[in-house]
Image (cartoon, rainbow, N blue to C red; front, side, top):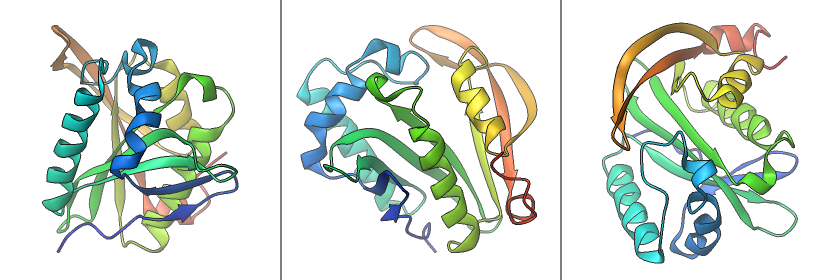
Length: 188
C-alpha cells in the first residue's frame, strides 16, 4: 500500500500540495540559493534543467508509493516558497521520514513551523502514521530548534553518516510519535 496522500493540507498561511511542473520557476528561487541548500544533500540549482531533473527524481520516488513531494504555497497568492518531502514510508511500521526547505526571504516568520505542524497533525490524525523521523546536520541549528519546538525528540547522533558535496557529516536523528502528539506533547 502506498503512502497515504498528504495533499492538499491547509494551514493559516499556507497550502501544502503536490509539486507540479509549473512550480519550478518559484522553486529556482529556493533551491538556487546556496544558503538554502547548504545543508541539503544535493547541489544548488544552477538552471531550469537542474530543476527539471529534480522534479523527474521526485516523480520517480512518488511513483514508488514510498514518498510524496509537497510544496508550500502561500494562500494569499499561491507563490511557492518551499518544499516538504515525506519519504521512506514503511507501511509495516507506519513510519515516514520528513525533509524540508524554505526560501531565505521567508526565514524567521514561523512558516516552516506552521507547515511541519500541519503535516504532522495530518499524518497522525488522518494518514495512520505512527512515527515521523527527521535526520538533520547538527550544524543546522534552525532546523534542530524547529524540530524540538514542535515536539520531536532528539534520539541520537550518527557520526559521519552521509557524504554530500564532498564532505562526510554527522546527523542527528529526531523522532515524533503519534501517541506523544495526541497526548499534547507536540508543538510548544
